[in-house]
Length: 119
Image (cartoon, rainbow, N blue to C red; front, side, top):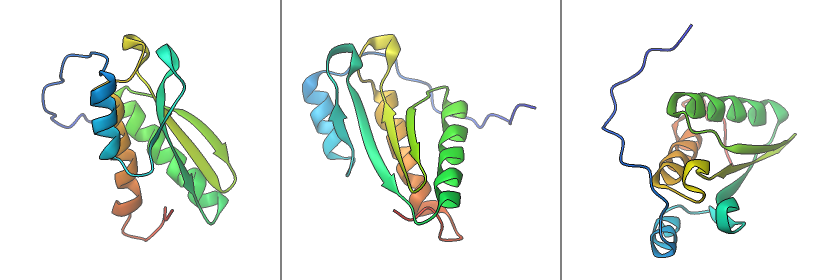
């Protein structure tokens, strides 16, 4: 069953960001860093957790966001950590979608009322 879609603002045209735009946006995303180059460039961040259960809950929450946004990260999952990597294959680089998705993933750590997902 598909989850209901919430209204969203109109999507900006998809384009590769310039190096200056990437550096500017990266400065607004603590803990995220550049990795790779050319078409393989991505932004990535490593998250640490105290339990395997918290790691998997985080991974599932990231997967939910990715599905809703139709923008899927590469995930490197270990028992007590997860590395999240975003890039936009369609533009062979980084786009605004990558940084928007990074903001949503970071918000997971601050929005859980039960106090889970602590880095």
